[in-house]
Length: 209
Image (cartoon, rainbow, N blue to C red; front, side, top):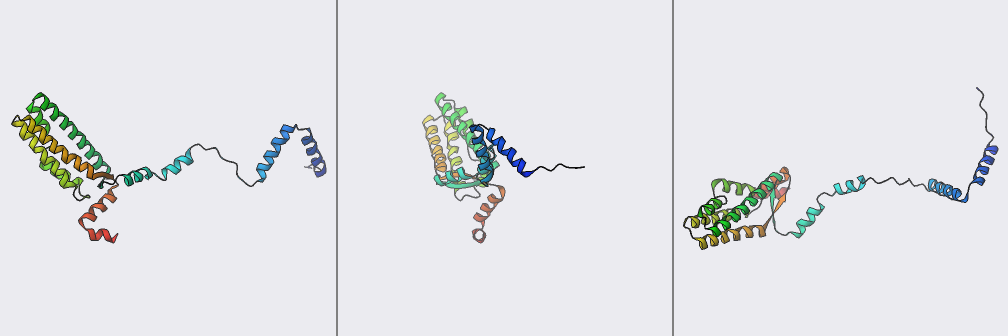
């Protein structure tokens, strides 16, 4: 099969004629395209947001790290489930205090005693406080002090002594606010939490790391 060869000179002349027929606007566009092709740079790709998301994902803890610098309270190392369980308990404690104050206002001493029983000390409460405070020296003692002070609320409620109930409630809240003023949650994975706990039990082992 014979192939017709195109004369290079004829092809160049044809190209020149096509360019000469272009309007000034089309010539300007052609110039811009040629400059863009010769500058050695890749054409910019449309940003669908993935680059921004990838950059943000590479720094997931930056806001929390900044918060930790601002919050100078002592950290209580907790795994996520432990931290959530602790928050749930604190919310229940607040509901108990609300019931106690409402009961005093209505002189409903059974309601006061029933509500105070939810925050009083017990073997189960002591075990939970010790578990939560494993990685934070001093936390368990403050937590147990809160529950021991709450024991007096039920005692005074059974004596139908409103002012004494309020005083006992105030002393209980003092322990509560004092603990919150001293400690904050520090949520971490299980391996890091175990390392923190081990460092408390065996400081020499922690220094080796």
